[in-house]
Length: 152
Image (cartoon, rainbow, N blue to C red):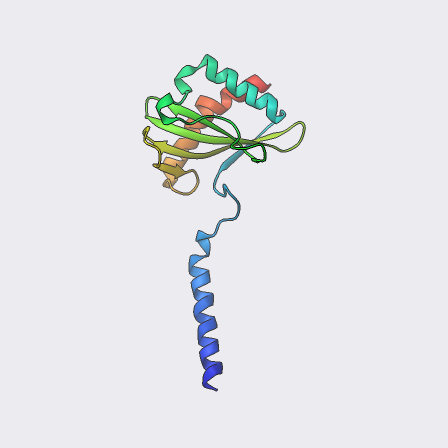
């Protein structure tokens, strides 16, 4: 009888712990990313982004960070891209991933404060509600809208 009571108490404690901590278990590699669907194939989108960065060099990340756009290896699902906001001294991390031959996901993932890496804050997770909204608006206005205009 004692073992049954102990088992029940143990299960209740485990269930409570899982309930309390379940918000910390987000599925996927980038569970909080703000995703935008772009009506073009991924390679074309990457070229539009490269052209945008050539024409707007202020958005290029300073070389000292050693961050480079592209896939980490040929099997990487995401094409990693970095932008820089010189006014705020912030690095913006985004990725692209093909949906199909005519659509691509363009995702805002995180913001790094300053040029020293390791100060990343995830969109839709680490910012308070107002800051999160401001970061998304800034990205949409400065970068996304200009990229979308090229696509259309």
